[in-house]
Amino acid sequence: MLCLTEQRQELIITKLKDGTVIDHIPQGKSLDILNALGILKKTKDTIAVIMCVDSKKIGKKDLLKLNNFELEHMSAGKIAVIAPGSTIAIVKDYRVVSKCKAAIPDVLVSSLRCINSNCISNTKEDITSRFKVVSKEPLKVRCHYCERTFSDDGIVIDV
Amino acid sequence: MTFKGQSIISIRDLSKPDILLILERAKKIEQMLSDNPKSTLDIAKDKVIASLFFEPSTRTRLSFETAINRLGAKVIGFSGTEGTSVKKGETLKDTALTVAQYADMIVMRHPLEGSARYVSEVTGIPVLNGGDGANQHPTQTLLDLYTIIKNKGAISGLTITMVGDLKYGRTVHSLAYALSLFDNINLVLVSPDELKMPAYLIDEIKEKSGMKITETSEISDAALNSDIIYVTRIQKERFPDPAEYHRLKNAYIIDKGLMSMAKKDTIVMHPLPRVDEISTDMDSMDNAVYFNQAGLGVPVRMALISLLLGYNL
Ligand SMILES: Nc1ncnc2c1ncn2[C@@H]1O[C@H](COP(=O)(O)OP(=O)(O)O)[C@@H](O)[C@H]1O
Ligand SMILES: [Zn+2]
Image (cartoon, rainbow over all chains, first blue to last red; front, side, top):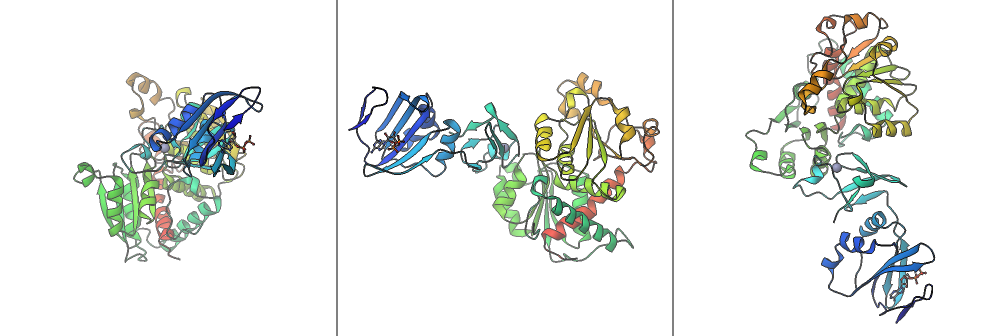
């Protein structure tokens, strides 16, 4: 059993043998991550969604514990865009074998969708989306194909 | 960059030294053909170049095909998709991969933005972008810069006024970006409020360079102090409301009267086609360089093609 005892709260969740833990997710964003990464479609294994946990660092946070699930290489960028500040821990044999903060990369591959309806990446052509990150804070990206720059509502996760 | 085997998709892919090298090559080609500018340099006799115009064009296609012919290469291709397998629903990828079996290089225009970049990625052969929707048209920008250098000796230090539709006109967007690579340019933007250059573009340029940019809706003062007046057409197809188009289309007319107030050596450029924004009474003036500008598209495109094919001159 793993006990999360942040501020008298006690959560009892079966300990992961192998899998991925996504922690420090800004409150309410855990479901967005599940959805955007298509996790429910990709695994039939147990998933623990823990919402609204008190966190010393960020007030309230969400957490995801994914049994026997390994994130694809591109997912960290997607997570960084949806839920900045999240941490990703890979668990093997009950131990955290690697941990990283989901950081926005310089290029977002297969993470976003271009909203320009006249962009070649929005057609039946078989194209992997690709955006250059022009600025990380605030996030601004430029489509590799149509070269348009997007920020705020213009940035759409590819689900 | 080493040009051999590369594609030219966007003006953003080119550094200032790249641009200068292309313009140097264009000058060299003009010198080599100085006895007869309409003769050929038979350096690329064994090459086949595909000219794929998914969208019609007059100047761009004809000057590309002229450039190919004057290098001694052969042209294959189409203009408009009527009668091609595009009409049967073939993907751009399949068309491109097929053409890449035949040709050494692709020159293309396509209505979708990013199409040329995509074709260069799937085929791996050099692609020259002749316009992808509202996005890029780098060879136009290069021939504009070449026209400026030829007429003014240099690009740095000039006062350049852009007039007309600065919102939708991709030529002025790319040219403004390219000018920002040079020093001490004073860029003046003259347009009606509805057709101002997009703020994101001005911001991007200002972040990258120290280029001075002034926006105004008055042409007279701007025209007085300019070395170059770059005029663009107000595009009818951009206006859902015809009344709006008619109100704006003659907002600025460049004519002899206006030019009599300008400096004697101010040149007037235009990517063409023009409608009424430059009065035909200007055409015989020495200041009017727009037809010559269209002509310079040939040596500039010859320069690019010869560089991408890896020829030394
Ligand atoms: N075997 C495990 N099963 C389930 N969750 C785990 C396991 N090991 C660590 N975690 C959780 O993964 C996250 C990162 O782990 P760790 O690096 O130990 O924590 P922290 O980031 O608080 O220092 C934490 O939320 C922790 O509770
Ligand atoms: Zn795009």
